[in-house]
Amino acid sequence: TLQPSQGCRKLTTFNKEVYVDFTAAQIKTLSFLAYIVRIFQDLVSQYSPNMVAGMLALFRYCPQEVAHLRKELLIAARHILATELRSKFVPHIEQLFDEDVLIGNGWTVNEALRPLAYSTLADFVHHVRSLLTLPNLSIAVQLFSKNVYDESLPISIQRMSCKLLLNLVECIRQRSDK
Image (cartoon, rainbow, N blue to C red):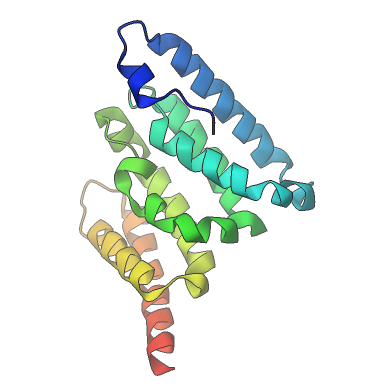
């Protein structure tokens, strides 16, 4: 969760290369954590609020021009979100639905990593759909409906979006019956 302040980043003496190295070290640490999280899940869950906050901060502050770091971050997030710790991310799902947070707004990152980001998010949403509120389900339906018609995405991502939409619609129907 350690990050330089916005004021510090705007200074002319701010060293972007050192910041990229610092972020890379944080992402490598998260990757290591993703590797051992299945073995030590009980121990890691004690510190899950810090891990969730740290991972979301890395998504927000990962430099846009360093696509390989964002890719490594997405891969680590995919592994962590595949564990039982995924329920700890549900209260923060709005941040993951924000494409500027999840993917970033750099051109290279946007073009190269969107399929991986949407695939990771779809797996996460699929597993926690029963925990989501109706407004969150609505945002998910809107996001993945948009992906169905996005010709710049691979057909596999469009197909996955369709499958997820069917699951979400069923979940919404079940909630509306209650």
